[in-house]
Length: 363
Image 1 (cartoon, rainbow, N blue to C red):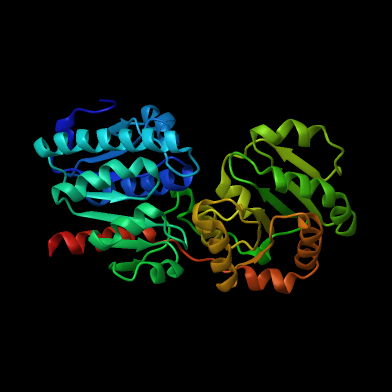
Image 2: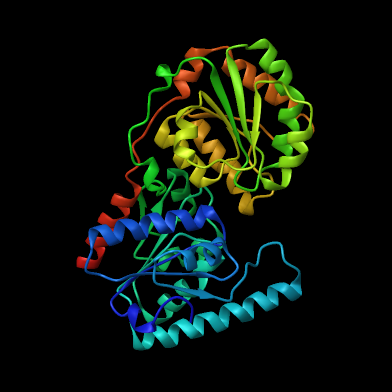
């Protein structure tokens, strides 16, 4: 066992989710909210040794258990069989532990790291709640939603895919830094900034397209600059390429709330957490969904943002550079259109989720 004594599970609220930051950070946000709301109730996290939580939880003060599980998607038949055996062992381990030290409830934000806890909770009759950040639910959520005490939806579009579940519109939990007021877009002064984000790992297609069009954009719009998060893998190639003097690059940006607040336009992928953070700070976006995301969820996330009047969508493909140049120029030249896409929305996701939890557990 990693990080905790199994007796800490007794009467606890278990929060599980991980594999990627899009699952892990909302889980931590829910755990922080639960600890603040119920200071006398233990809160413990369960995840995967291989996921982002496997690196971050041991550095934290959270009681936690990390299990040897891995994902199924995109694997060979042999690796899928291995993943299934690991999942079965992890589920059995949790069933044995929770048979002796039963949790109060289980909250899951998705990802393969949450599967053992959810399956063990279902087998033992422990109430469980699901949070689905994306517009398209993952396979685990589809499977377990009908038996969940509640499904908390990050985007309203997901409700249509889960007709047998009790769905509650909640939004996606965001990091504490985004639970504040942000400067209105209209208050930003030149130089206006195009902030480019491909996620912490970067996005090769975005890097290449931006390098191709940035000089023309910055020559055309002298009151704009570009701050470009390349990802660690792409940093050297972009940093060594010929760039416009007002095109700055960084492998990774800390303080993302401050970086978004300083931006007049954001070029980004469309992961659920990114969408939630853009909503919180009210920044307009050009979204290029990752084309091979599981269940095509990034495309659906971006389409939902477009439908809400918050973003424009660009398709990744051979014509991306031309589409990017045209889309960025359209927005950079039109402050009225930028303002129309700027719709700040206070994020109450943690509070709404925990209010629903409290109501269900009292019933």
